[in-house]
Length: 439
Image (cartoon, rainbow, N blue to C red; front, side, top):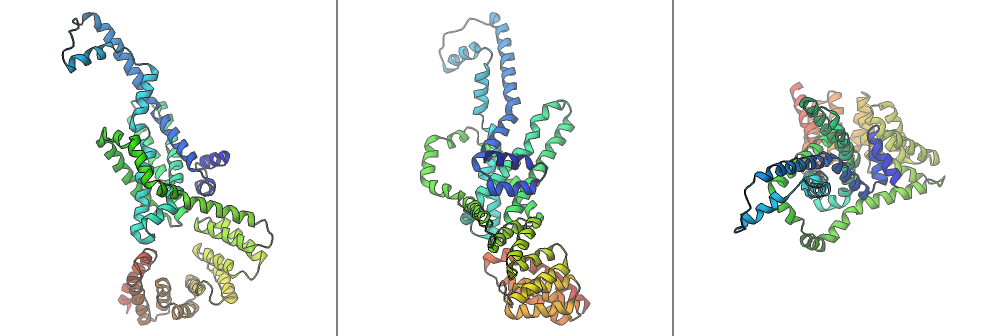
């Protein structure tokens, strides 16, 4: 298990998407915490060395000035009581310096802020965007995302350990190196969200940027809090916090554990040469992570085992359409529709119509989408593509009606569904204006 995690860690440098997939499949929270804290310690070693050097220099100065100092007066006040202790101090020992350095909050603050600010901020944004309640998303996504982001931070900041090779006076090189490291961390965090949530890269970058901004605010507030930070880490407060929220904290890993266990069982099931569904389910996991080569291989294996597997044909068609291979998409989707006319609540006709539109076969696109919208007249995506097909045929009045129905369908959707379909409203409004201008 450690070897698998180490392999995934260093694979982040050369094949980040594959590495993130491995982390989601086999990652362990303790490993991510140890690695992140280890990198944080390595980053602060120069500070510890500096503390030792400063302590030794101050001690030498005090020793040289000691004979010239006035005789000590009897301690009559708190200020006088502190004076002998200050003058009696010689050079700080290495142990004392390291203990003082480790006591500093800043040594471990980056991983800590990622855990309590960065990840919750990202999940909160997803929650208010309509992807589910905050508590549900925390249980299902928190630990998975935390492992990925902690390891991404460790991989991105590990090169900073080599900063001493840059001349101290070369501020431009140091600043460039620091900015590059932060951009690299942001890119890895965005890839983690893209893979875990199954979203496109644009929204993933936005979520990563929001998380980084929240983390910077958290670090700033941590610095302003001063000594209050240590009271917050009181063993008594931590104990009472654990007693009050312990069950909720333990449940945060349920999503990761169930996901990893499910995938392990599926891989075991694929050893059965007649189990097409196991290959299909693994294909869905790879498809959500946008690992299309692995997904296609699994779906094709499922079809090889069971040629009547309509769902695998349907997903192959969806992948081909997303990749712009419209002829392949039409072939797979027509086969799936032939095997099951009402496959996936008739969504096979929506995807087939969109594939026909992509191939500029507007008549066939309009026919397929007309069948779909008759069955599911409330689906915004189907209405949008139907309007596009009608506009392609020059039937502008009908296209305007379809686009208007698309906008209305989004507006009347339940609140928790709008995040998934709001983009079709924006696209429909844009095309509605274009069709109206042409009329």
